[in-house]
Length: 349
Image (cartoon, rainbow, N blue to C red; front, side):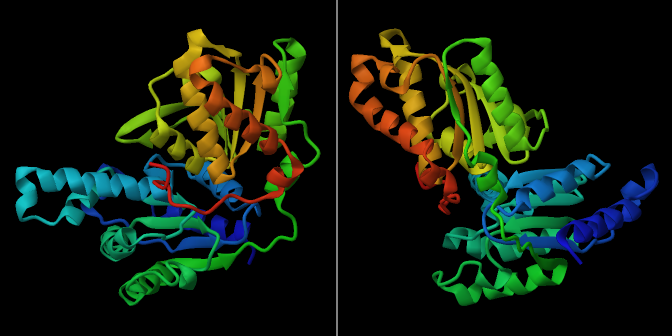
């Protein structure tokens, strides 16, 4: 069966197993529904399929999040619990799972499931034992098969029981495709537009619709350090921001890393010329481009002036030279043809 058919099967199982009525929700433990682990090379449409599936799930007790963001939340919750009075003797994993279960979560969609470090590797077994025991269904995307997770990692033998647990609760399916659809979205496209005209805006609108397959997008958010970064529009693994949304708000390097790991494509409207009055915004823009570039995120943007005229602030002139160089590279066919760089979400902190 193909990936879409398998996702339809998960959807049907979730709908059929949904508790009926108020008392049923209180008294009945949710019946476990077999999830799906969808793997394949970058750009094959895994995230797009998961997003379409997620939007089709007709209940609110669901969550879709990047794997690294989810694990960061778990670690942050455990650290906070350990500092509390209750954390002296109690189990921190139980403490972070409890509110998840109380929320009624039935479906967890994790994008880019990839285990890099030993802290996550040693935690996953205990964490998902508890989640699966409470009837949470997992749908995940990954570039690797389960048996290659945490490959060559330190003390990997301790991680192997999690792989067995995972394969017990999900159907493992490949998404083979000869075409890199993410690459096709950008192939032959002018990803930058210049000026402040209606024509400039229209060009970026067309690029956005090509990236999203015609979806206008809707607001969402990315969690970073316990707070929410507003995303004005997101669809099919892409996000669209105004320059002010990112660079004229109190955001930093860690926030931009989170955004780079939450989306494979980012579109930015109305990037201005940055003179001395915009020093802080220029510094944030430099950090933003560094984060997107390091991850290999595809960038579309509208600029008020040509790239070489953007940096007009003595305070950031040196750093801006590197940023302009990266922006030039990021519109090249060579850059657009590459996949995302697989690095941990906290690598730039």
